[in-house]
Image 1 (tube, helix red, strand yellow):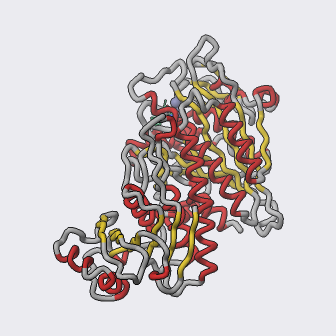
Image 2: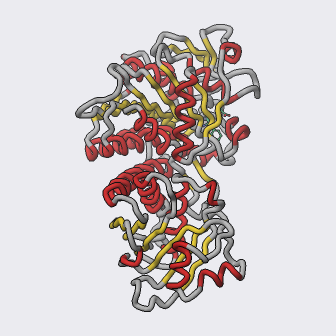
Image 3: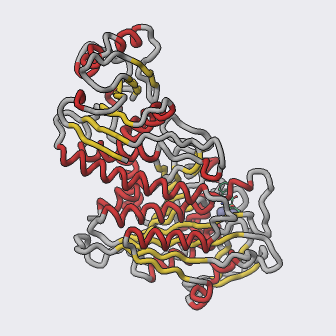
Length: 499
Ligand code: BES
Ligand code: ZN
Ligand code: ZN
């Protein structure tokens, strides 16, 4: 992917197409739209006049024009960005993504974008490039024909008056973030016969080598030794051995608070049949994405290693397959987790919290002072929030609010649900310390969170339930359907803030 930054006149751009952001109900009578209208012999004014294009969010109009020797481009794409007052730097990713997909479809290889955002130049450039990269991800990896192999591979960003260095840095950053999000999405899209826990660990290892992260894979013998009886119970019914993936990023020079360590912990269930509490077969195929939390941790760690922030970050992924079998755990089994707590397993389909229990305890034992876990944990969060908000809960209000704020900057929405002593009563067991489900049909998402909370000792902790947001059932103008890599951008902002 080639990229270039232009800070004065877009007419220099040596590409086949121009794309420009247009606000809702905007006329072509001033500024850059006026210039472009002149260049195209009045085409913009005429599409606006016919009301074929109104500048609504993600609306597009594709125009061919005679360039009259002034610019190389002979195509112009108008992309609606909605109300001028609501237009934020984070919207630029969807803008560039929408433009990329619309132009790629028409065999255009390179385009220049006039993003018209007055946000921070580096942020705008990063979002623009990320959108170009993530918009080209497709699900068709395993097709032997009819794959979408068209691509935009030359991107020029024009921001008048910006510093070229800021734009260049932003473009570079956006490429890293976009590629890392696609790394996450590729993992989430893999079929479970290919992406077993062992394969997930191998991919993590390979990635770690490429970007310079420390990587340790704990096998079952090691986990047994550490007393991870909760995690191991989920793996009993599977032919595939469980793996705990541990990645470490250490900066050359640290600027963060001494002794502080942020840990990102992910649920990596490579397939969730439900185990002996087996799921209905309809839609069970969707459960290949049950490792999305783990994939998010891996993608975020990849980006961190390349962006080189000045604070250390620990990544932990519990990669396990949940299958029914003669050896599988039964509803009513009791297991002991790494922190010594006993758990009565009343539903083997509530397995995510069982693996996260040992994963968060392990992260804290490694020195984590702040833990953010992410998981496709409950169907209940989809009922509550749909696919628009990730559920967030935690034991530290400041951390929860910081993540919500980072989400706002990144263009990702989080909605907090409560936790607390009274909810925690819901997971008291008659025969063990706790049970892995709460009262029938009540506060399912919160019950998952308060269970995980039992395995956090002193650390500040937040839990992200991404079951509704990690997979998109429909394509959007700026991205394909399928895995979304939700939370990668938000977590990168969180890491930035810790510096
Ligand atoms: N992986 C599922 C959560 C899930 C369910 C995600 C449906 C997307 C769609 C998780 O392991 C699970 O099965 N959770 C149970 C918990 C219940 C048994 C307390 C659920 O949500 O039904
Ligand atoms: Zn389950
Ligand atoms: Zn699950």
